Structures are given as structure tokens and as C-alpha cells.
Image (cartoon, rainbow, N blue to C red):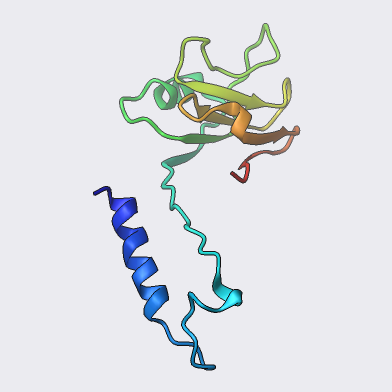
Length: 132
């Protein structure tokens, strides 16, 4: 039996045995007919003020430790293109406002970008996981 199934069985047994103040069980009450399971997600996040250093960004992107989100303050900016360092073949997707921006977020590609809302302005950027 999987862990989720075991938790569900325990929770169902708890709900059936729980007595409300009016003498009915939680399962019999219309107020408690729906049980919502919440799944906890753990994200590894690196926040780093790289002080416009390309080497610091390379170290974060190509490190052996894989972060889910890398939030960069003062990212290095490519002098030839309006972008920060994030090679096409890297493990991350870049969220960046463009030339002159003072922040960037790198989101690991194992998280589908369609499941996130991303916004980037010159002074800040943000990502938010959409509700499932």
C-alpha cells in the first residue's frame, strides 16, 4: 500500500470516529463531506547577490547541487544582448526583464513553465506556482 493510500485510510478512520457536538460523526455531517488532501512541496532556493559577476552566475547555474529556484540580485548582463547568463542547454529557464534589470530568476526545467506565473520588471521579478 502506498503512503498516500495509508494516510487516506487513517484520515477516513479518524473522520468516521470523530464525534461532533450534535452527536453525529463527521462523516455523517453535511458540513464535513469533503476532505481535501494537501501535499507539501519542498523547494531548494538559492538567493544570491552576485554583484554583476558572470563567474558567480556560472557557479550557481553549473553547480553540482541543483536548486529549484535561483534568485539573483544584480545579475551579470551580456554586453552584446539584453540578457543575463543562462545557456540554452542549462538546467534552468531565465526570467529576466532585459537590459538594465537588477534582478533575475532561474527556474529549474523540471518544473514546467506552464505551471508558473512569471513577471519581470527592471527592479524585481517574481514567480508563482499556479493552483492545481
